[in-house]
Length: 469
Ligand code: ASP
Ligand code: MG
Image 1 (spheres, rainbow, N blue to C red):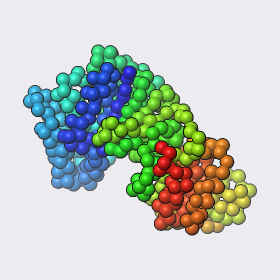
Image 2 (cartoon, rainbow, N blue to C red):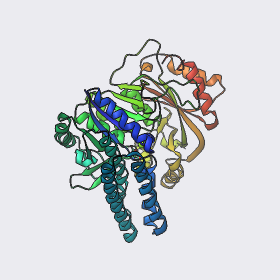
Image 3 (cartoon, protein in one colour):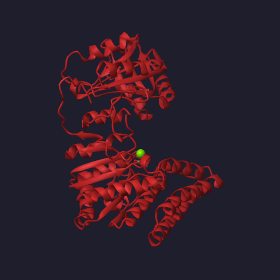
Image 4 (cartoon, rainbow, N blue to C red):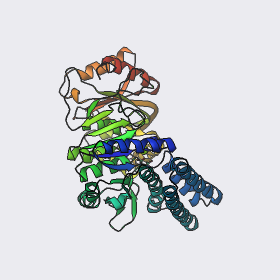
């Protein structure tokens, strides 16, 4: 059995975490499984690298150097405390030093040029995973395991040049990964691969987008035809609701890829939304597991799952930090291309739309936008359309949130929407906007922000999600 396992930044913070991760790896390996390891950067390190790039750009030499020093200390503390074999510790420390020196050079480059391109930012961000995997590699060596270290591109992940959110060239990647890693696995070695980072065919370093280590794991998994992909994190798995809102929320034992993707997009776990795609295509089960409680079963994500009787809704999520924009005007009625014009103008300004609804009267179109883009979206629409006769009014409301009810059991089950909105109405909550995709996997609706938690609680209760997991 071949398992690709990824350790997220939330479970890679200090020495104890590295001991724990290497223990988990050793245990799985000793059970006779072949193991490929993927790691994220240490918790918070990618953010620090981004801050570093800004210090360098703003020519803040002191802050730049201080941060590099901090990163060096953060990593060497782990090797100093955790690696007891002198030879291994020195080897890892030397390599770490080389990486830090390179990082210094890249930061200086940005500093002197006064220019930070997406390409140089990716290069800079790549150091997080290069350092964390180096440490993990050292910890596995300490245990006497045979392991080899790879960056994403050395493992074979090749992407286009869309820096910051690069897209893997799948066929090439599959071919490369198989060629590079398979022989090692045959020999009983454990490849340790840096998550998140890859390169173009020309060898320029790219990143797969924030949270991209999950994506690395599924890409390797599908390339190697792994039996399972395990994502180690600091929670027991996906949950029926945010336990901070609903104390009786339960860990979901089994969920389909489609449901999990809906939840990932909705931000239930900070999972990379694209990450599940390769696993879904290759039909490889993905397990989310808690590194602090490895005995917990976690959440198993499957292509097809059995839907138990009465199990309609899987989870309720609350999406905050969004705003609602409403455009209206009689000029929109019967005018083909209106929606296209509106969405085009937002798209050109790189504004992402989370939810859309238009009534059949065509008198208005409502959309939900991430709060960070809200002002920009409003002014874009006002600038482009007001005074043209097409749209009379553009209004916005930031005081809202979205509640989403997710579950494959909703498909073709009549009366689900009725139950959802009755439960919400009984709490005196007014629904402002509604959307259900034709996949019938998700009903989302907009309500006043301060009612969000109340609605989530009511729906969790209505569908007995605290009981049936
Ligand atoms: N280190 C990267 C990030 O923080 C990738 C990851 O954690 O998966 O976004
Ligand atoms: Mg992460």
